[in-house]
Amino acid sequence: MNRNSTLETSPALIGIVAAYRAEIAPLLHRAKSVRRAAQGDFRLTLPQGEAVLVISGAGKPQARAAAEWLARKHTLRALVSIGFAGGLRGKKGLHLLLHAHG
View 1: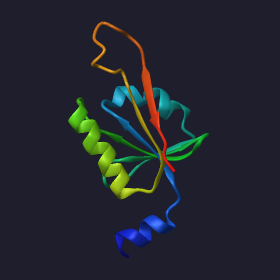
View 2: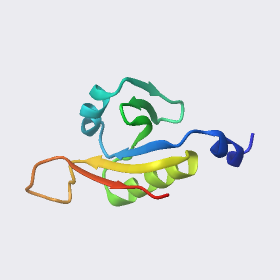
View 3: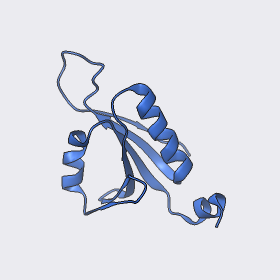
View 4: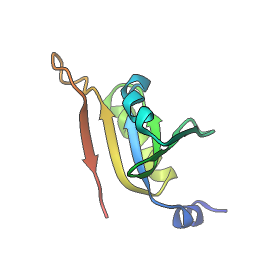
C-alpha cells in the first residue's frame, strides 16, 4: 500500500510533540489508553480523540523535525507542542501552543 492511500483511509489524529518524557506525564495519566508504536511514537486515546505523540528532544530544530515527521507519517487534524518552554528562562510553568488548519 502506498503512502497516499494510507493517509486517505486513516482517521485524522491529534499530533503531539514534547521534548522530554517528563513533560507528557500528566497527559499519559489522563489518556484512556497508551500504546507504544514500533516507530518510537505513542498512540493515545484521549477524551478529545485519538492522538499520536513523539518525544523530540530539546530545541527548536528537534521539535520542528518531529512535527514534520508526524505530518508526513499521519493525517493530522491538529498539532500540539507541549512542554516547559525552556527558552523562557527563570519562569516556571507548562505552556501550550495549538495550531490547527483545515
